[in-house]
Image (cartoon, rainbow, N blue to C red; front, side, top):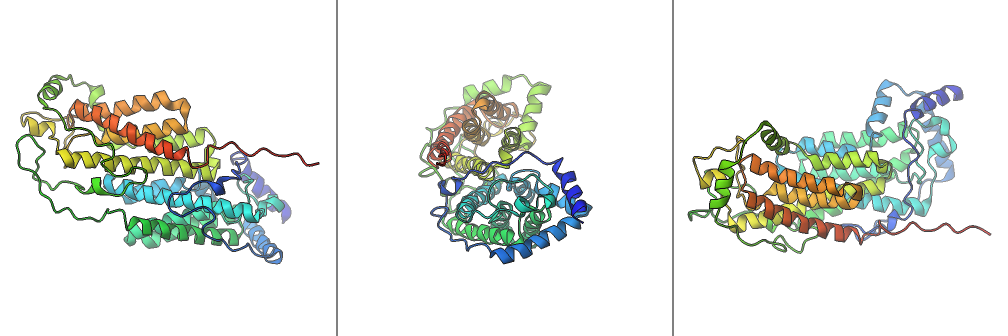
Length: 447
């Protein structure tokens, strides 16, 4: 039997990634919502006798792995613990305004829960089942302690946040969370009690994040009216999220902290737009940036390229920082949009036909694509300094795509890029203070 289990384990390990990093000080990193990683007490792991019984369960499951269980393991082991939850959250969202809030809350919950998990891991230092029974492991050994499970922590946090925001999907989200935790037991790298403790911790952190969400003013009702003065934005459709600029940000003091000055007269901008040459390349860029989340995909790619997908705390931090940048940049952008009610090109000159078939139903100044792209690009430049030039170029490309699409004046984009840069730098300033950039503690040789 042991030989059979060993062959099964080796077959999976040959396709597995390299040894994961530990981040032993991650439990001390600064959190977003909970007071600290130590704030939520995690009970001790089971006794040695109970652990031996759990080990037998893990070994028995390893022996009975079938194609379905291997597929489940591969799916949840493909990236960082929060990796699959990015796509899961996106599948629930069709409104980008709602998406940035939901993903910020979810990724903050995953990050805070991961920090709390790391505090408990290094308080108890419980080895995983693969430390003693390597033959049972179906994925690469994770050198951090196993209690509580980081995959279960992420699953508990993400599923609880998303279930609260999308109650109609609560049952399916809970099932996904259960699958994520079970995959680690089936893979032979977590005890059932690791998963149970992780899931409970993730849910507790999610509850704190959801309490904070009740105070973010995202449910405020707009009681204003669309202005009727000539030269301002007007539309038969109701404006989208007119109160977004009043939402409570995470790093900014308020949406108006970096509010730009008013837009200019758009006569020169309109002439530039009308005389701009349309080519397959410019039209392709317009449609590409209108429908693709480049920045989220870039983060996933860089985590894989740099091996940081193996580092659960650092990956969770990156997802949270990028989500916060998008959320706060959206708040700052919408504050300016509904302060100035900047007109759109096809409203300024009704004879003008944009490339993009639908003009967004909210004011144009400043550009949301420019603001959010520069904010997110600035954060990614901090996380991956070797990509600074690329991030800057892509932010400008995203902004220019809105000019190419005919739905923004160039001024909208220029001001949006400047606003996004200021927001992104505020997020980076906060990141530099969270402890993750501190040098790793030196090992002292024993005497």
